[in-house]
Image 1 (cartoon, rainbow, N blue to C red):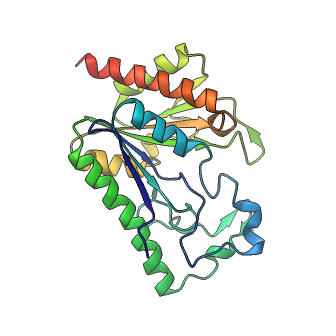
Image 2: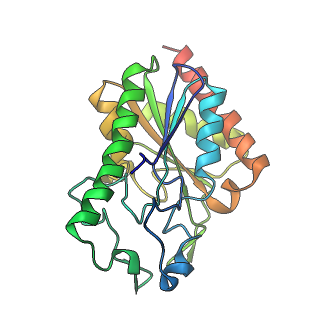
Image 3: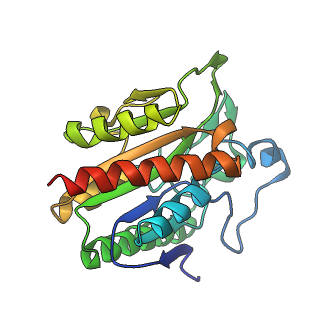
Length: 237
């Protein structure tokens, strides 16, 4: 099976990862009719994340690595041993794609999962940048609750880097919160943490609300503000 990973290199600077950039299934897998409701939702991928990741990598002359398969096929932002690697339910409904996974199917899915992580590892190893940046988006309404935050900066130990992003994005007019709507301190930025720390780099993750993330003018605004913050932060030290 062809490796379902998209890598676009604009230089040797920052590595931008995008774990949930696609809702595609590799051949010969197909979504069944009963899963059609989920294909265009946040359960299958992060709308807007891929163009944001590519634009940021281009702006900073770095490399973007995008998973070319749905998170329902295998979730690159979970450990290989996680019970959520192949999600079984969403909104209380079973996911037909993952109802029964044979050993052969599991092997194919793990091949894609491992290929993505190998591509990220290679990009980080050859990059000259001290930061590995993960791009995600989140749904405006989750389990009936409206989310007011527009951008979340996820981090664990990188408080100064998170503060720099928070400040610049706030000045750009966005409603920004640290570690919202998910927290990097709870293991929810697995992929970027894994690869950054393996090579002595600094991991950070951005979550952009999806109703904004899919708008080209907002994408441009987010990328410009994020790039300013990273350049200024790196220039200080």
